[in-house]
Length: 151
Image (tube, rainbow, N blue to C red):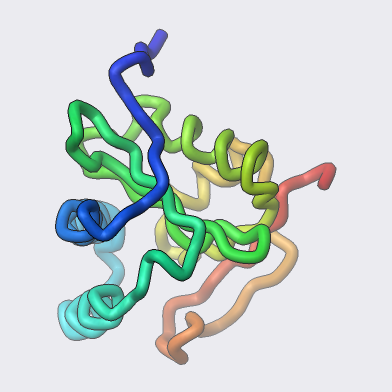
């Protein structure tokens, strides 16, 4: 049993930005070993330009520290990241429950080579309905477009 009593899921504000970007970087380095160093740097530069206020972004806080975050746009989970120390503890499921139940998310795109994420979404109830040969930036990183089953 995981104790979520010391966690808060709060709407993103700019005061969370530096910690959110730090969580993103640590999480990607831990889970996206298929990215070339050049592509990682390119994606990192892009992520640093995102206006997180333009999406429904929520930060998972533990004692005021961002340990994860979730972003949804048009019923699609656009981002779900956890600090590596907190992966596998049920926090991702907690954020997905919020995304599905409160933000009505039922879609997600996931890198095919990110097997940990693919397994997570499948276990949650997502099914692949389409596969691309490239990601949305035209790089050779296939995406699985997934939809929540029974939705």
